[in-house]
Image (cartoon, rainbow, N blue to C red; front, top):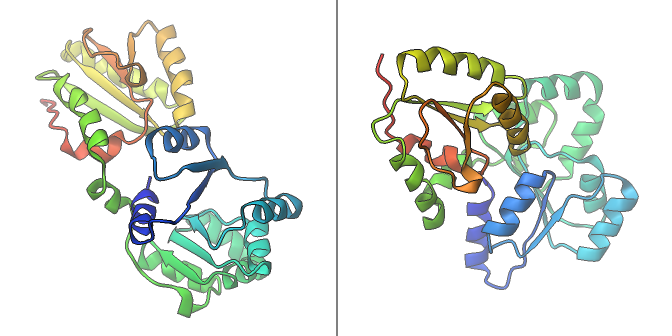
Length: 265
């Protein structure tokens, strides 16, 4: 999602530009393939082995490779560099855990990988410092801010319209949202839901899983407990009292600040 505004701007400046988007998850693959005409070429990322990467690059012959956030694939980086393909790390970030690993166990490798980039654009000053401590050349580090904040301004009318039904459905009902839910946390959400629904019988609990593939598992677990769950992907309406609404589509949280849900103390 964060990459779309950047690539859309690239396409505007160079109308003949062909963009091949490679993804590593099924949810991202489906979302890009069905909702963004910008990426006419959309494939899964090849396995990061020298042979697979070499075959992939020889077939597509890219003029440049742009990696996003923390996607540092050693063979993709090294083979691209060997073929003279410019590399960019966009919205670059590295967790504390990854930084400690690279620093302690693989500093020569990460230093070599980072040296192959023509441009690294970290999402914050803190991230820039981490990359420099991992020996990324200071001359290739530039700033552009966190691209996720750009997405909201670049959002299409389709995405804005797609949340109107959700904003209108709860009306004056009490609503709370559990966002970025991980596997196993549905039991905590269930307990909170049951506690709140005693006081607010008209309660709507909205669940946004961290990964879309978790939605089916969470729905099954909640249904086993006797809860009625409506699915956003099926355009099911919020009608039943004490209902759980599962957001099994991408993009909702980008609009969530626009929701005017109220929950009395």
